[in-house]
Image (tube, rainbow, N blue to C red; front, side, top):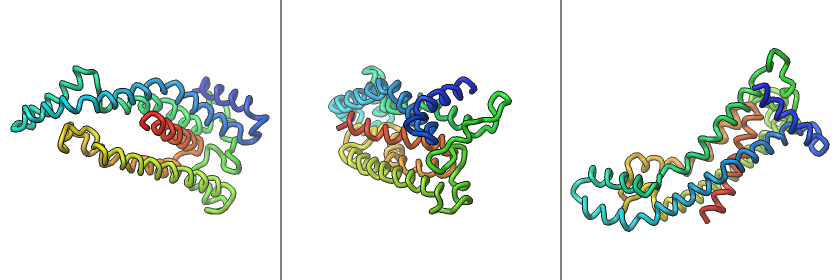
Length: 237
């Protein structure tokens, strides 16, 4: 934790001439961008995997005809085909999973009052008027919704809502073109149908994260979600 804290502090020191009191917040955004750059090759691989999955649809249609009277055999055959061709319908989840350690490090870093027995100086940093270690409830108690800290959160909520709406529309269009895990005529790989129904709404859950997490962790999530939206728009266009 102390090593990670020093990394954030050093980034903040580098950015301080440009961002002044919000240098630590800018460091979190930069750190998030670096993490996303590291996992970008996996995101590209996931996009290739999705295109490969689409190319399997004619073979899946043949399997459906072959096992028309045996849904269990059809599902097993489809799963075996994906394994044989090394195509995973869930490959897109891997980049998100690899980001979790960075998120939890930030969460704990800005949730602890001390680091290595010393006061956590990072908690004194702000994003404009909102301390990075505070939550939305703290902002509401310090001036209300339209107080200086509250306005910072309103800005984040507006950004998250815009990104979530864009994601919702894009995901709905994708689902209309071909439901997640479809194996022909609406039949789906086991368990993926429910995922497909929930996916259009996933980005809106970020609003809850911004509201309940320390601002630093929320800033990481907002930056990562925005990056993911732009990345997917480019890779899946």
